[in-house]
Length: 392
Image (cartoon, rainbow, N blue to C red; front, side, top):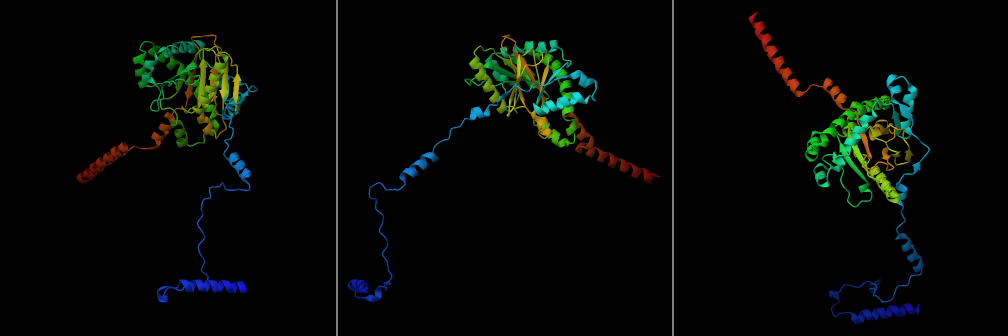
């Protein structure tokens, strides 16, 4: 009580001592007035934190970059348990009611996305002549290939060279199709051999398309309920010039480690660029390869194909049209290097033709020109009948 009185008296004395001569000019200061807190001043000493070690450990743990092993996780694992069945094409062609052969084809494309077709009716000499003619394509000098290089505008021609990318020099690629622009450019840089090569390819392509049409009709028979517009849109995502052929030259390399690195590079590259050409089926032909690899995002299948067999792999179109029932895979032939100059393989990317779809649209629609012509005819007929009625 005494201390409070002393504090009050001291405060009152302070106010009286500081009070000016004219109290009306100064507002009255409330009794509960408190002075503002002092401004912080840097002491120059390190702040003391009780749990500084804990905070430091937390920051180091939070800022640590995790260890990632993406290449090992991305590369598919190899499987040896599956071997694609061998289908006799003549049994399928003779009788469409042979459900045993049909069911084997449907099951194989659904499980592993691949099958072997034997007795397909394509002569070995026909395939061999096209393969031999294709070797001349890769003898065109690099400076002349620039005029027929693939790009976003044109999907045919030579594949772009990747310079120092590992494994790019071990394989070369050329995309062929029935295109007048490609024919003119290739005849300009390879006038002697391209005409012969193109004729042999067109002859082989006719036989390939007959086989592909039969297999695709069988695969999509149960999915005929898809609307015409949907099927047409799917096919439009692919190439606009019909079936195309990817011609590969597999150069010889004796270094096992380098070949393994090249194989891994090509697998990752194919998985990334596997949808460059939308297609329903891919039919692989060659003069003879020792192994064939089938790649998907979930596994890698390796097998030794039957001599003279036609390898068929599923494409993205049948996978989408079947609702994911059929598998989309990527096939790659492997050569052991016995033949140095003729390690050529071909992959024909087939899509169902759009002529039938457009024909259906033409039967159900009338163009504006036809409507205008019909209106003129009806008008003239009306005036003729009116004049004829007035005369009689």
